[in-house]
Structures are given as C-alpha cells and as structure tokens.
Image (cartoon, rainbow, N blue to C red; front, top):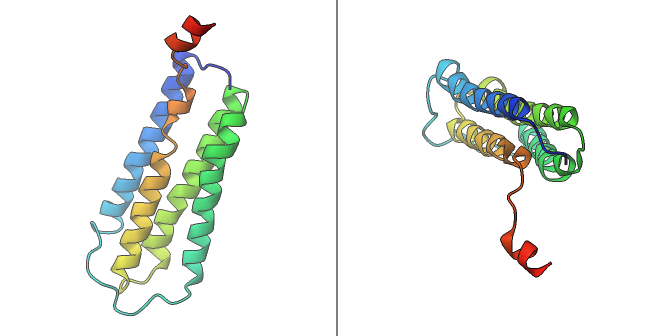
Length: 138
C-alpha cells in the first residue's frame, strides 16, 4: 500500500471516528440506551442473525484481506467505507429488526458492530516506522 498524505490520513480518521460515534448516538437516540436483561424467548434460527454474521465476516475480510492489498488511497477509502457501513448495518438490524423482547440479542449485535468498526481504525494507512534492526543487519 502506498503511503498516505496528511490530508488523506485526516479524512480516513475523521470518517472512521464519526462512524464510530454515530453508532453510539444511534443506540442511545433510537434504541433508548443500552439494552439489558435476558431474552424473553430463545432466538432460535433467526435469519437476521445469520445475515448479521455474514456481514461481519465480509467486513473482516475487507479489512484484513482487501485493504492491505489496495494500492491507491482512493481504493483504501472506498473499501474502508464499505466495511464500516457493513459493520454499522448490524447495529440497524438490532435496532429495527430484532423484537423488543430480545434485549440480549440487541446488545450482542451492538457490541459486535462496535468491535467490527474498531478494526477499521486507519492505523494501516500510517507510514511504517523504520526498523533499526533491519538497517543494522543489511
């Protein structure tokens, strides 16, 4: 991956941080705070959970496979936005598609969404530090 300039780094960090903060704002504004309590009934084979799990796997593949191989800064930005949006969609599943009597499931989806967005922190775009051991042995 090519090194990013300071304005490009600022854009990446700003987008990532705003999407992370938005996740908390959605939960507290639309979800009325942190869900608590046990589920009223077992989830069973809820297709929403399978869809959410699939999206989280695709988001992780974007972060750990596609982003390191992206050459241009524009590709990195597009892949980061795609991965973060897939991660954030899991939060919306919990807010709008999981019934209110399933607070444990809602909380799980919210936490998984947070963890998935945290993996997209653009540390991969920072310039690599020089390795003094490699230079001394060369």
